[in-house]
Length: 343
Image (cartoon, rainbow, N blue to C red):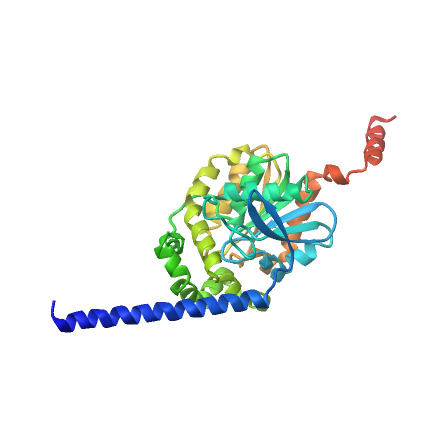
């Protein structure tokens, strides 16, 4: 190799190194700035060795909201769903492991089933004995896992824009890189957050299309969602999505709780025909029963487009499930039974 080629290679390596160093410093600065400007709004609970952040509002039957990928619990506040649901329910919103302010230990494989188990234990620890569970996007896999594994705890499901059956996903290899050891660590502390920030507008546009991105979503702090730890969590969840859907799809017939499925007909992120319509057909004749509610002209973010329709779905599940044991009036139930028997 000639001296000129060696010098050229050295210059290129030096430039790449300086670029990575500059990227690292920039990402670290933006991360610290985002965390300083957005302190945790809720509480923390440590369960199974993991520190989880959650927000709790309202009183009444418990409603648990499980967010999708890329965002964190504040997504439900920005959509207005949290505030409106808290008028009638005790609403609990966790940041899933690795998202928002919650930890995600690297020693565990955080499948939807593992996340469901952790959230169930956390809910028990804060005094919840049963709940209606709502999941959005990949959060539906967590909600379904909880309903399948602890059916006595989950009183009913509301599933928004879910991914329920495996399919070819060309985005998976692309977004899997930040979850890889070593090279992934390098990427998520340098180029991955910057690249994601550059693509943020078209990515969010695709999530909401064909509707415009609402201003209240734009107000979410972008760099809270692009911090290295959340980039890794989102990447890992994206990688596990297909095998998780494959495993869970074999168990949908075991569901024993009422289900309402909500989907936008124009969802460009998750095909509603392959997922929501197919799941509804699978569950309609099962022990749980199911109802599909399509939102015409709506994309992936159904809870932003028509939060009132999501609330109606929650109300429907609450009516079908009945009052939780902890809120029932034994004397009123005794009088009702006596009235029915004519005594």
